[in-house]
Image (cartoon, rainbow, N blue to C red; front, side, top):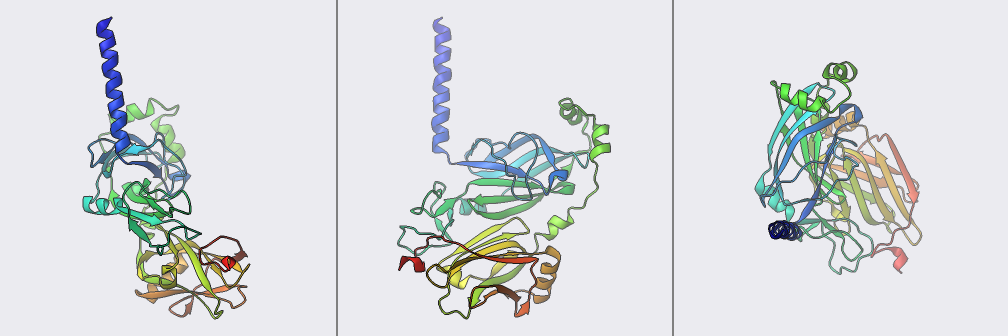
Length: 352
């Protein structure tokens, strides 16, 4: 009986120590995504390596959501991710893949120090808002007193033919870390037996139902970038810019706020998929503009314009519409919208 109590005490002690170590180690979440529901994959074995030496793991089950965003939650993992070793089955390709990915430790360490701005609405912070601050891993956006978010999610995107892209999420900001190539596992009898023993269909049946031969080129194309700067302008002298949010075709997301929204830096950016921006021209005159873009048409326009371009959004003086220009040439969006809104900003006309 004394031996059993001693063993129980030892196990409880080890569990407490383990929990204490996790409390000291920063946490993050992991997402596994795909381009669409027809192109889903299922991990069979996985391990995410961390600087701290403890393993993290992918969510249970198959990929979900859209490219770069799984729309599915999972229990928190602990540590600083520096690589991955994943074996997965591509259901629509009838293929097992092995991904070995090593992240740049210098790059990871730099990003782990960053916390990106999440909101430009009213804040008690008297300092001008910055794109990001070096605040470390523990800054999480929660209120107007803390407008920054540090690293929150490690996101995997599985495309056809073993193409895998990894992103880092900082709240609403998403940055591509790298693109990797998984290798086909040719000798897969053991994996087949292990994987299909849990399913109600055979491999042959799944192949007949699901098989698709798709190139990854489209998602490779989405990674194309051009050097350009967005500019919002109006002949209305009362124009005040507050917020601009981009979602790009390569699944990256970027947000701009005051004061740098007035002079957004030119940098390498992917083709915008959709965007929104908020401005005011007076009290009770706050608007949101939205634009949605075609990949093919927009990419051709950027290719023609070349690097160091200006992407201009010219708002009508009465706020009734806006036009888009790329290097002074009209850029046709799939659709544009404007509607009134009310969001409190520190420099809003509503404060006076």
